[in-house]
Image 1: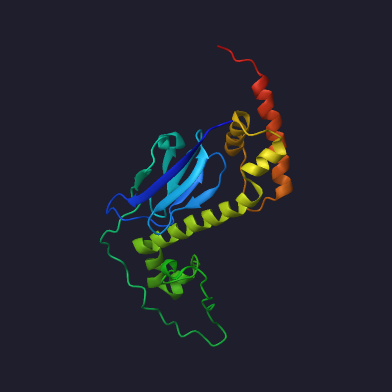
Image 2: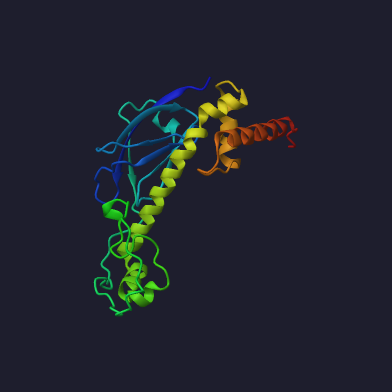
Amino acid sequence: MDSTVWVKLIVKDKTDDRFIENAQVISYETMHIYATDSLGSFRNVFNATDSLKVFGLGYEAVVIKVKQFENIEDGLTLELARRTYMIRSVDVPAKQELHLHLPSDIKLAEKKDDDKPIALRSGNFSSKPPVLAAVFNPLSFIHYYTSKQEKRKRNAIKELAKDAEQQKINVFYNRDIIKEVSGYEEGKKLNDFIVYCNVNLHLNSRDNALLVKERILKLKEKFEAQEQQPIIE
């Protein structure tokens, strides 16, 4: 049975040394997702053979091996480099609108309530603007596509959407389910098969538990067939 190691980690910003709250920590073996607290701190126990992917919104991802934490009681500090930087830019103002004095029977669609976090809401449109917006509201249209701040907000929303989809997938695809479906006991073979599944199984949130189990069983057949093939030196 594989040995386990306590991972104690503090995640900081490499530029200003501040703690990074809610940095994501993902186990490659279990595909479970964890997060740092308000002091950038995280601790949990993992198999010694596992590797962890650590990243935060707007930061470059770093992969670390659990073995690095063996015999280190106080843990380690990990510094993440920023993916984007706040730089001085020239933005086109978006407040001015073009009034076309359209007839009363021709109206533009009203802006719907935006359910995104306030900090990530666009100052112009709640979603990608249609081409007609370039005619009805040209300055806001230009601002949406040229503003560095607007681009950063859209990138952040994409990251949040990816995280939300992964959370849905984790409900029907995780270490316990792979273990149950494959019938493998805890140990190297199960760990190898989990890695094999993570590499070869491509899922999305529209998949369901039954479909995923069928795919795992098919992968098990291929996995065992490859194991039986002779190694040619």
